[in-house]
Image (cartoon, rainbow, N blue to C red; front, side, top):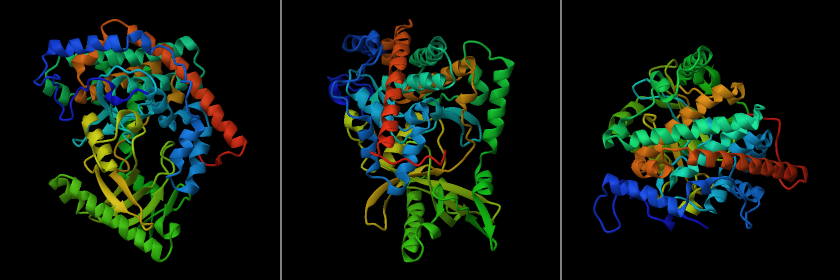
Length: 486
């Protein structure tokens, strides 16, 4: 089994690029590392996918994850994964990590998202209130081989394309657009100064510059609608949707099991104890914020709390939404405190250097994102069951524009894929070595074409794994609840 420690690690833990004998590497030496990596894993070796002879049962992998989750919510997770191969893929990051970890890798490392499928790229708000395009989900973030994120993205594009009925050639073109966007953007970063790489971000009004040609009127209108909708997705909008006023006080609306207020989840003394634990979590996590943001958070007070079911792969992890009120009832803030466990990459890349898994998530997010949520932080908490768990906290909503691939034709998905690839390259260049990675990728399309073959083959594997879950549910091996959709 290949692990993160099977080759030279760049960058080092402090972010520098050092030779084994000590001292900084020159740009030429860093480029040579990229060329040397081709000897370990030629670009053509990325093509295709064949499951390892000892490949674990995919249902066993996701079932092992379920052992540490809220038992009554596990069937909801399986139900969502049953809906389609794409829904299954969203919940199957651990399966793909196992598959990638069993094979060769380049030895060229960056901070990985760990779950870089196309729906984890979206419009987000910067602290300066600009809309930017960036990665959104970092639950699995960990340093690892750069190509694992690119492969996760590439396979998701084929799976989404098949769901839309695209023929194979159209799916291939979408993948080529995404990988080409990654490769060409990485070459751009290889030629920039260090600070220029760090300051780079993908503002909404600059996205057209990442595309090979100006998008058509329909695509520009699509972006405008997405931007307008993203700007409405604020704490105020979330509060209007998720809360109501009861006796003059804002309360979170009950919609079990998707949203369950604490008073319903655990009435009586246990509920009061859990409420106190969550108040302490919110109060204590503020220590991980900068002083001015801690001061800002202290202007709010906790009004209500509830358990929330989120996403697909995350269903069953402990996730709390906390309603805070500022000046008055028209000044709400919704925070989400989400349980953070070990990354699915850890068995293959090594354990995180951070003892607190919430800190792992937050540090990875801050390293990869150009602009992160001002309330992003972490905390360790002990539940009423006596078990210790790690959490990370962020705003529930802050100008988030979510892509809808099911509405895209092949041309639109190709444009979106290119934006995703370019954004992923920017995120990797902040932590990895853009010179070495660009040198490995080269100027030609060898890597791009290899990942097209990989993406098609892995999409086939994903369909087989989705069928395995379907069979497991039909045979009573696992239980799925299919009456709830995300």
